[in-house]
Length: 189
Image (cartoon, rainbow, N blue to C red):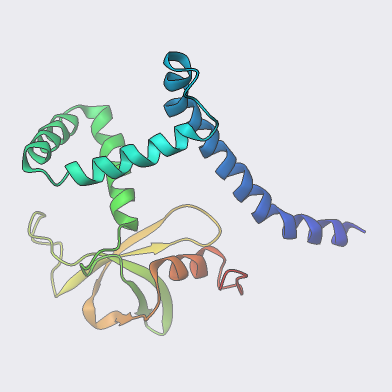
């Protein structure tokens, strides 16, 4: 009986958690962006308007951030935030996390396998140059690789010689899912 209940829980938990998180995000975005419209223009408000406004704002922010005037203002604001001790820690942590998942055409965040004397670990290249760091970083043609932990948030960043790296032909999402589940077969193939 206990095994059947556990099997049912394991089957429904990912779906339930996903639905709860989506609803939480929806409610918060709807409240943040829809509440002012509902307050000032109650006749124009309808459920979902907050989400539409949030998407439109994010779209236009994405467009105008490329403007050099806005970019220089943004850079000045960023420099200011990086000077305030507590805000610096929070801001740089969040921007590093966001850039970690931003997989552009650069060589970072590419899934690799690191061969430690026959033990192979899955990781992501996070850095290949260390010009802004002391000379000990990047010595002997080393690169930085983030090795995420299975079943939890966190991981280790290691500096390894390029010769220990085996490139993987898989997406960042798929490689992180493989590590996060301990290599278990996944339903979202």
